Each structure stands twice: as C-alpha cells, then as structure tokens.
Amino acid sequence: MEKGKQSVEMTKFQMDLLMNVIDWDHYPFTKIIIQKGLTKNEFQELMDMLRELDEKYHLQKEEGLLDFTSLLVHFAGMLNEKLDPNETIKALEKEKIYPELMTEFINILAREED
Image (cartoon, rainbow, N blue to C red; front, top):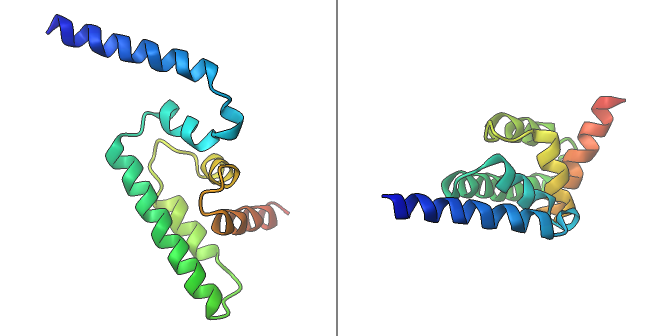
C-alpha cells in the first residue's frame, strides 16, 4: 500500500510541476477542469451536455429562434457544482470549444448585465 501512496504523491507532484510550466492563458478550460478536480466521468458528462446544447442551438437557430436564454439557463442549472458558469463559459469560448454557442451565452450574459 505504501508504494501506491508514493505513486499518487509522485503523480500529484508532477501535475503541480506541469501546472506551473504550461502557458494556461491558451488553455483556461483545461486548467479549470484540473484545478476543480473533475473526474473523467464528470468531464464526459459536461462534454455530452455541451454537445447536446450545441445541437439544440444550431437547430433552434435554423428554425429562426433569436433568444437562446433557455439554453443558457439549462447549462447553468446542469453544470457540475464544482464549476462556475460564467468562468466556464469564458474559458470554453477562449479555447474555442463550441465557440458559436459560447459567444451566444456571453452575449446573453452581457445583455443581462446592462
């Protein structure tokens, strides 16, 4: 068991080193996932939700819908509790993950602030 504990500690140490050498300005979403400690399953659930929301967004856009607030509300409500919706949206947009959907969410948030 001691060997397993050493292996976990070594992995954690190596991850800490990597966190300090990577230029995280280009990978803010990845950084959030690591910092918040999302599991592989939680990450996959998030990506599945984003894919579904992106599909709905494009479908609704094709149908002529102009207000996508319901998609943003769904995103925020279903987002893993470890993540902040605004921070996650900005990070996804910066990494160009579902960029059209994230830009739409950012625009909705900006209108709500005004």
